[in-house]
Image (cartoon, rainbow, N blue to C red; front, side, top):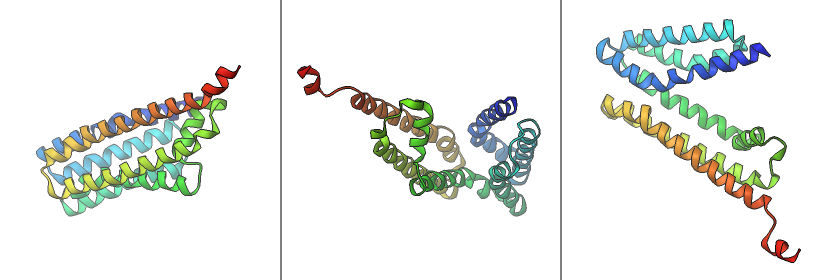
Length: 203
């Protein structure tokens, strides 16, 4: 039990690093160049892998898969001496999430349904299944669009624009989508749980 809790804590602790990545990368690129920035990313990924493996006791294959994408981008940037691979990393992550969420639509239950069932426990209403599927589709659309936006900014926009979008705008959009979906799900759940007006007046 302690191992699971520690592993979860380490995964949560990694979130700030992901959020700070665009800003830290911009500073590194502007002051050290692509190769040293890539080396710094590799060092951070190696440190994250070793800490989570040693103290969180996370399974090797999933942990390695999580870090392989970033390591591949950093190695490519290190070899080429160009920053594009590092800038495309958030797009690759978003594309991976698109694939992950999309796969749950084919091999259900959809991701939002899994989350809703875990949060609601025994109180989950089966009538909410269509909503959860629609919400999962909405997240897929967002991740696909976000992949395109980050890619376009990485290829054709100034570094400042890429940083602002990936470090601020994308998270604001995610927060708005999450809050909107949760509010809509709550309203629909209350309507389904409450008796119809005609039934209430006939009693």
